[in-house]
Image (cartoon, rainbow, N blue to C red; front, top):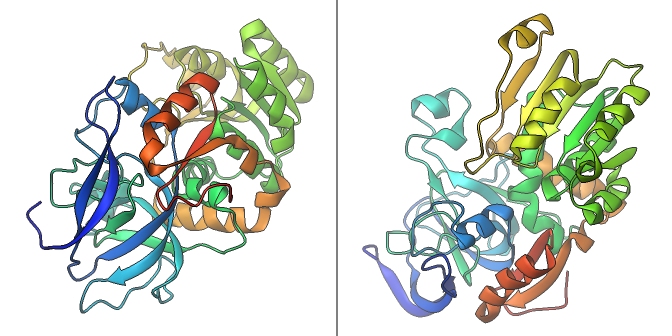
Length: 375
């Protein structure tokens, strides 16, 4: 820890290595440089990528403070800094905020080409070593230290913590996928995967006015909840992938899907999804954020059927703004709160991961402030 710090201790749950329990450690409270912000963490929901790291399925720095789906309250700004939120309005001490999953420089090639999530100097919250200059960069800590170049957005008090926490990961990623596909109004949409990404995609497609929404998953429990998130039909593809094609063609006069959103990260899903596209359809790939088996593609089919294939990884600040607006207007139309299958104080963060594994919960919450039983 090479920067200046105050001596008041800040507790954080530290990931040391796969297979080892998280360790509760204390770090000095950071002193902020110009352009930086300190947020007191209210709630952090565990994401699938957190679980992949915890289990060793995804490589990442260690030791690290995990957690990036985070909501909190601003407690301090660095000196000489007129803080502005992602929409251009002023930020103030006490504001309830969400922030981009990454800080970017704004000047490199990728930032100048509207890909800030691929910045050459990228800093990702919840994915950085806690032995560096910014040890408190993850949500599983009492405070989070936000770098210059982080897009910060105020979050309405009307959105519950359990719902708002996922805005800067799952919800914003779905907003980016929707933007990449050109929106869903009047379109037949297939969503592969009924985790929080897929369920949020169904809800967002419904609000946008999709003509038909079909959700597929291999988990019957997740399939059963899809209709509550706006799906017109949901299919358990574990019982037979042909059911997915049959349901789609019946709803589209045998044309196929305008858009297929692949949200599961499954190679089998990708293989099943491509043939579902209508001529001129668009396949958006979101779920494969860890290595999977190779999927073959027939170039002739791609050309003759005039498909568009897009990959979406993380998002730009505009997508986080859209995500928060979507939740502010629509969160109570869908059972988002029910997707959080438990909450734990910071000192029991390892138990939160074990609970997520045992119950296959879509999300589990960690409360660094210790205020449980309040969504």
